[in-house]
Image (tube, rainbow, N blue to C red):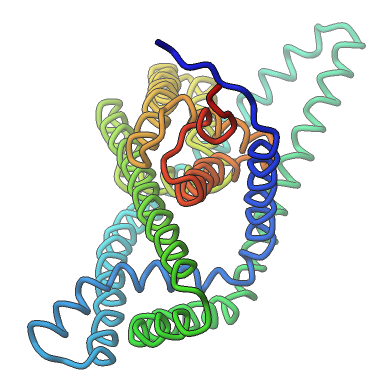
Length: 362
């Protein structure tokens, strides 16, 4: 026989206060993350090297400080080695691209000139109002392209000027990783001394749950990126496009950036191929873009939801709400917020259902 329940106003009030507190905490974290980013990354890296540090301490009887230093060096060496392999391959293909770039620019100029000439001949026979509208449209298009190129140039200059700050950021991250790893026990002892033990245990449980889910989220996005890269590489190979590896790599990097995506490159490229009398390649690129878009929309919520242990529907909802509130960055931050909220509620209510939290049995 099913029990009947009545709403407990006191429980409901506490529940609402907890919700407001959680979202206030998330808001404060969102506003302050910029200032603590190197330390957050360092915390993630310290957890990443912890198994290696334990192995060095337990098996080789090395001190924790030496083991932590070796762990940091291992991370730097691994990342440096992988980046070196990627950069060397990209340099080789970029050199090949640069060799054919002059002839490509020459062909591009000829095609644009031909298109412009054909367009002028077509416009002459059009009504004056339509001709004026086309002129304004082209003027707006050229202004937009000019502004876009100007913004790209400014971004490159700003990046060059921000290199010293980037080096400081990297140095602080490396040193913080070492200190968080080498003084792990001392930091735990400090927290245990100054805070109640049940608080410390609860914070550690929340921390372990959040970081475990974040690692799984990163793994999910790496899987999605690998799928996109594979689709691009196979698609370019089937179409017969040269330098498929470097092009697939560049487009994947663009795909990672907020707002931009594979369509930023593939759609203009396809249009150019079509108007320069190469419709097979242009249509093939559009089909490739549609395949990537459909696969991405289908697999992204499922992969992310599976990795972080949340139903794909809620993952999709979090991504959509994040997109509406924060733009393209919200697509990534939405699932992160869901992870944090889930971990905090699990810690506070320890697996209770909403029925247990809000209602009393009659």
